[in-house]
Image 1: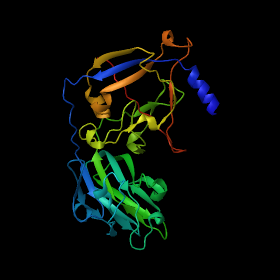
Image 2: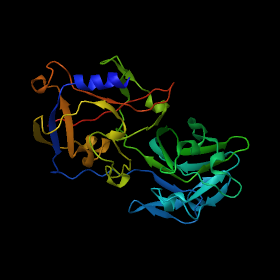
Image 3: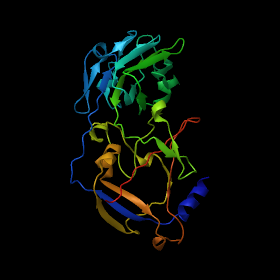
Image 4: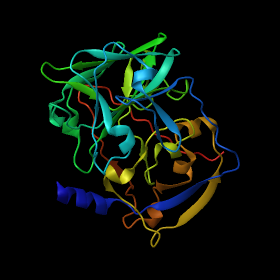
Length: 327
């Protein structure tokens, strides 16, 4: 397999690189969500992160069907991104739920998990399911299976259409186990962020309705192709997404270097929807691979790249790509 991939890399043509510069001639629009519910679970006081985002203590901000147990750890892992937010949690030993009053429409639901031992509960003993109204977000979920000492916490993000004015997040522990949650977000999404159609893989040009009003979407990855990671506070204003660099997902690529391929530069103007799709920081500088046989060691070969991302077998996976076109 390795030999075949190396041969594929050699066969790929060298690429011409185009540098696209996002023209900062207009200020990026600000998105103000109708619902912006941020909860610090198990906390008795509010917690502020990201230079001003306030997560409210859940003993005053929400309705719990049953109280659960407020848990905390005095010495959280130094590798936590938000230690003040993640060092407390709410544990549930029976079916419990948070109930929120929201404006009907699509919402982001973001869940934060940091497994830690508390009282008689071991960090690896938690096994549970999570629902959002009629949707199952997590089933037989064991958070400790997804963490390491270097990455001790995990994060799950969903886009869910809420058709009523009530959103119920349910936590259902397995028999003899417990459920927990460190923090959560329920935030309204821009109504036009997702288009409700797509082309099926291998059927380019054949547009199929997705039925987004009747399904929940898990956002697996936000990938900044050709760039570095982007923190939530540097995302498009009001969106608060986390963008990962693409080097975590590049499996095989033909990448030219400035020493053997030409570089051209052009400026483009932002479109409002594009800025909501991704922040100007991501669009500031981008490189594109161009099929230029005149620069190829082997004329006629096409350049390309292979990106590998894990998916859930049996579920529909949706790939959304965005690029900048000159206006």
